[in-house]
Length: 207
Ligand SMILES: C[S@@+](CC[C@H](N)C(=O)[O-])C[C@H]1O[C@@H](n2cnc3c(N)ncnc32)[C@H](O)[C@@H]1O
Image 1 (cartoon, helix red, strand yellow):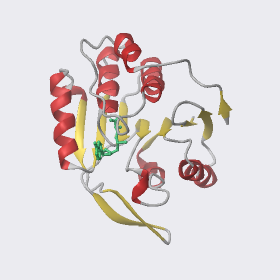
Image 2: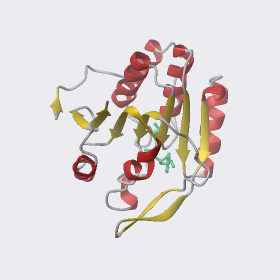
Image 3: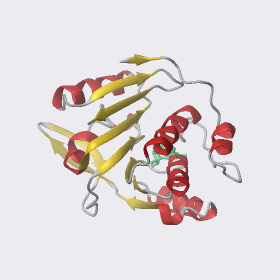
Image 4: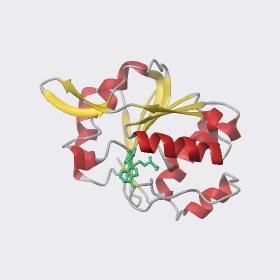
């Protein structure tokens, strides 16, 4: 499941590669790292997914939306629990003229039960998106609970396309490593690849 580290990346390289005319808004410690954004944008540019869902909005929303603009194909649905971050991301999408490529969905964290476990995860009452080709998971924050990002696959499983890819950020953490073991046990049709970059990235693919 291991892979070599990706080549050195930076936000500036990414801005250049995607033809952004101004610097991406980046918040240290909260925005996805440049190498993770480069991995998802490379995948997006090569595979041209139609339906993209991300768990948490921000810089990643701008990058994925710009890929859809360049691809002339695809749409991003970004689940965001915090109203202030919904507003901020929408503002940033507007600043970059990318609003038509991304819907930031306000999805407050709610208590959900999976088996005999309880999690705080995005409410999906208003989320009828189907055939998800690309799922990018960078939230909710890990400190909220153990296996914070585990619900993504069980709760969105029925909405995934037969052929799909799932990218998990911060995968160098023990918590994320355990989440992937649980996913692969529950959904053995996925194959996993680990990228040893700044914060670690797991890529799961099916089909
Ligand atoms: C890791 S961040 C999301 C990063 C996003 N994918 C990006 O690339 O910018 C996960 C969540 O943390 C919250 N968040 C973002 N910035 C924050 C900040 N400065 N302080 C507290 N929470 C923040 C938001 O709710 C966001 O969805």
